[in-house]
Amino acid sequence: MHHFFVTPGQVRENNIYIQGSDVNHIKNVLRMKIGEKLQISDGNNKKYICSVEAFGEEEVRVSVLEELEADTELPSRIYLFQGLPKNDKMELIVQKAVELGAYEIIPVAVKRAVVKLDAKKAAKKVERWNGIAESGAKQSGRAVIPKVTGVMDYKEALAYAKKLDIIMMPYELAEGMADTKAFIERIEPGQSVGIFIGPEGGFDREEVELAVSAGAKIVTLGKRILRTETAGLAVLSILMYHLEG
Image 1: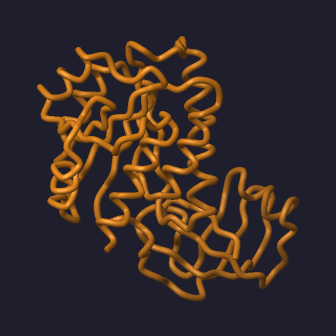
Image 2: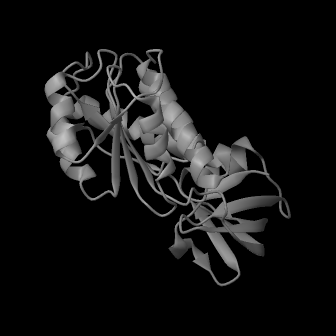
């Protein structure tokens, strides 16, 4: 069943009005017909099973057949602070992070990041990443579309993370798997968690010290050094299993 997102304001009594680029997708790409069923999420933890009622020039009206409480979101909000990687790796990271339940993804410019984006390039990249996040949310049946924020510098990211209950930073020089395991097991549903992941060159020692000063827990992901596009997804997988289990 095809899955689309709307805002709560587009839900009116027993009808939902789909607008924007999804209208063309429904009419001309999917070629859906009157009476065909689809799934709608309102971005506010509600899902609806609907059927197509009418096609307009700028909107598609669907009628609500069944209202469901969304159960696809993690019981904690997970924020992925990703050091800017090379090439198109960020696209893969965004797509998979959304599938694994990340609530928000924050691209971070750190010292060892090879990629340097000016304001114009960064804005275009963020727009594309948000498009990938929306596509990933539809594909994985999410109840919300995770946001990809604008690119932050490292100190901005640490300040942004201070609102969270828990901050963790996998670091290749960290040791103590038992300590890391115990730390993760203490994370409770409902707590917000920030994960800081370095770029290909990892974090500078000063950046690690700043993170610790900001309250971050330095953790290990084992004896192997993971690529930047693997590390965050590994932590998200561990947290998903822990929080949903």
